[in-house]
Length: 302
Image (cartoon, rainbow, N blue to C red; front, side):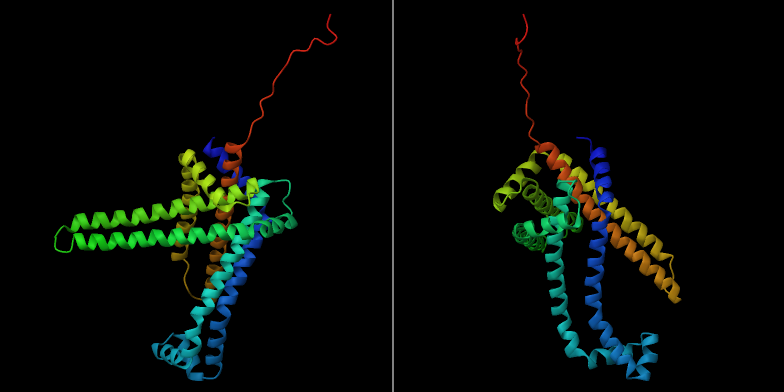
């Protein structure tokens, strides 16, 4: 398969389903607002009841910050629980959306909102099982990384090989990134296998995904890498532009906000592009061809 054609088709499929990108962005915005509201409420409560706090906050004075943290220490102490809850809900929603996106990309003719939500409901439980196994493997990868760190610390404890230690510690992080990348690749293709084949056997689908990636590793990994580079370029461009946008006056803050939303939409687009290309690769390679057998017929021939 041609990598250029795969990515090009993925772009077209993603743009065709732009309405789902808007849905993802609205969901992301809603989650962000839910996270911000408690902190915003605390700030408003503090600033409205103290003229001195209002003046100090304009310059973000350390005295105001210490006062704020002292007054609301009990409430702030519960914010991490809220954040964990929001993150959990966000992951659940994104798992639901993954089912919808795979359904839509699998059958392009069924690209209505109803088809999207039907796919989300249909595959949510199966994808949640894949997610659970993925999280376990990610934890395992970090555990291996920590054990390697302890091993390197023990090996170089009484040895003055700074360059060698630096190289091995760098390779340790490269290995961690590689392992996480492989885990995510297996996770994504497991969902694709479940969605395309409508399989209810999660473990079997994961095994099939591993076999598929093993047989087509170069293609799958290169496409994954190219799209990741697209995402990285977008982030770099945003950071470069953000450097030249001043923080004041308010109009420039609004410009920064718009740029941030563009970056978020771009990242969501990349996410959809990942799914689109994965579905396309799996369907094309695993397609079953029926060989037509031609037989000569003498009916009506003298």
